Image (cartoon, rainbow, N blue to C red; front, side, top):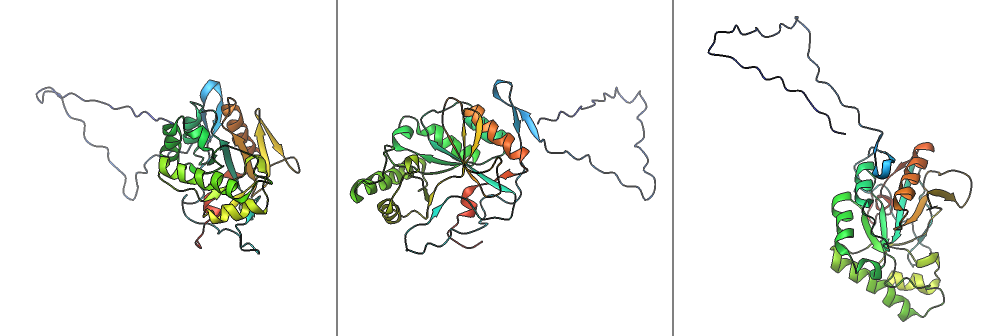
Length: 266
């Protein structure tokens, strides 16, 4: 929100006009500078209203670590265990590079986690670089070509997963730490390949946004710790704003997923 301050310009002509004395402050009184209340919403693209969320802690600082896995392979994370009113937004694929995405992320003050395919990033790396550098979004892996990994051999899966991570690191400068299998389909071989590729967690979801509607796997609202899935589609504005509005309705704040899947203790 832009605040415009009016500046009073006084012209003094050769000392012929009297100069007003400074205001007198009563003894013991203080002058308090005006304070600005952060906005709760701002105008968005296409006449939408975009809810704005304030950061409840310093983003980029670890709040919780990746849960332990009993079998030595990377854990499968469907939701985050937290007693805070936090929720997490993840955006998949990268098929549609919507021109409003950067504006929405920045104006809402929300930092999503992006799970991207090589085949979609290849045609426009600068778009995703801007989301990372200017909006604070973090980029993670979603395979090179978006195949159904379930039942495929180890070498095929490893090539899809590791190759995607290598490409994203080369193009965007940061190696992905998290992995999401296409369609949410995976098996033990997927977990072994993702572990060997150096990922710390395989991330699923508990709710999704499609065509401007938030859909729940259970219940009728978002709950603390939910991981929400949406995609880079033509309906990006409707989907992202629907997620934000649902967070506001359910009393939750979107925060970075990575802060709760850290590999070092907070």
